[in-house]
Image 1 (cartoon, helix red, strand yellow):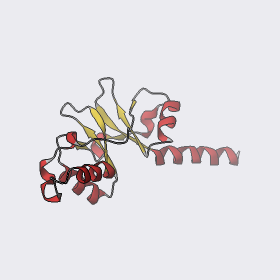
Image 2: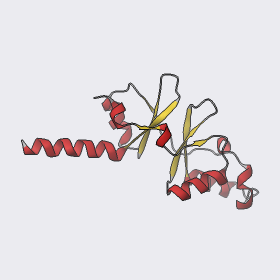
Image 3: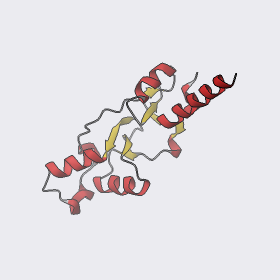
Length: 138
């Protein structure tokens, strides 16, 4: 099965530039109620995922920043504590499932490592649940 079937395209994904600030990340995460968002660099390449925890730890370990200065710190300067691994668009379903067991979403990149979207674990589970239901009916 082609994993592109599950792809949520980049245009529909909330993501941030690694030049975005802590304040921008906090505002976007709060508005969309996300605890993690993908990061892309100026070339559009996936460079990791920033989490609420990453932001919290950065603020805790940098008391000189304070909340009032979060607009001065770029996300590329915030250490990431979780590694959310991407898959290539031509990856096998098995590769996707292995990653999705440990990640809420799997970033998808093209051959040039450009971020093209995500695959959410929920869609994978829904698909296989429907397949299981069909098999029980036959």
